[in-house]
Length: 344
Picture 1 (cartoon, rainbow, N blue to C red):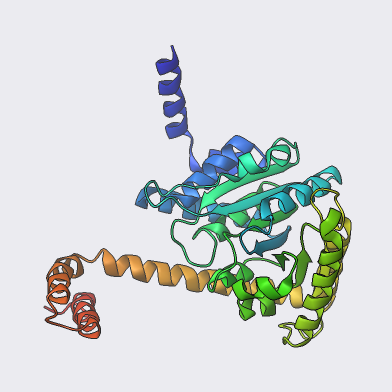
Picture 2: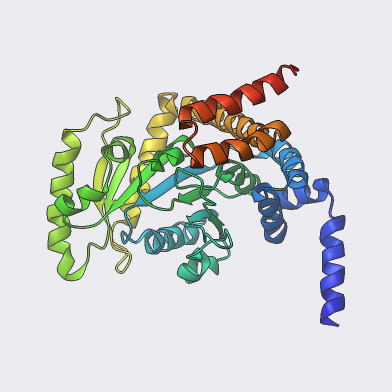
């Protein structure tokens, strides 16, 4: 019987049309949303074509959420922060989707950490949806299909999209081009922690949250807050009308969650008045466009038969020291360009 059930379930999945998937997402069917995201994140050519159609049909229903990016150094407690912050928002009546980007296994390519197990309470809330996705080696701390996943979740009626990145790194700034507000979680003792934070991240953050500000750590957290406020005075803000704030927060006591949400609401309100919100969303569209062009070019290059054949010989020449790396690149591009231009 179990085998028969699995067989019929597979048959049902195969028979579900693109239109049924789109309709299911719009009707807030969580199982169908999960299926849509699986197709969107797939690397198979068939799924790429399906994903393109799904996103195109969902776009008119998207764009009405608040998109919040959340990053921080390892140990800053991003998952515990998101669970507590998300629970507060869900209890207030918002529908919250969490796109949690995990480090990838080098063996399976799947998520290593598994955020659903680390956000157990939030994952059970009726107003919440958590989607763990592997970074799959993508730079920027996000999945290469995070933009499309945001659109699908918005079309499914989620008011707030929280994008949790892998962690602070030199290419972590990619998430900035996907969200309306960018939160950076930091720990106490700013001087030590700054060794692991790139200056560029501080310049892009809309707010800094000193996490784990509770118990014996509270006085140190206050001191850290003052230190970061001084540091921010020396860093040029990316928005001329907004000065990044530094707030305290504790996922144990719940301290600071309401203040953080009020700050975000104030920022969004001001951004809309100043027409910055719409301008930033337009920038996100252009960033998405550029990202897809680069992805298409890379795929076209490495799937080119002549490039594949030539690369085998070039790899040998590189290993034997017969050619330099720049020469190898020139050789591959000459093969690709001759094929692209119809030359023999």
